[in-house]
Length: 74
Image (cartoon, rainbow, N blue to C red; front, side, top):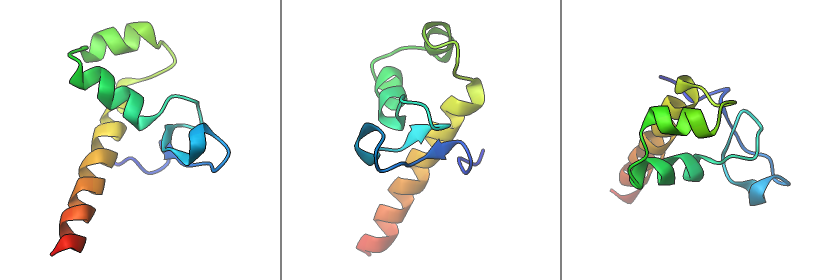
């Protein structure tokens, strides 16, 4: 799953944090919900404008960012 085209960064929106499809919900928001134990189904029920692909894009974005941090620290 690629996050390109799904995860957007706009300087004036949510302080420039990565957001989903230009909306005001951030990658951090979604990852926090998952980390707190919410299921994908619960997130989609609470935020009906999100899709399963949006959640997967958040995970992809986080994995890529983590990988970049590891590569640059070597």
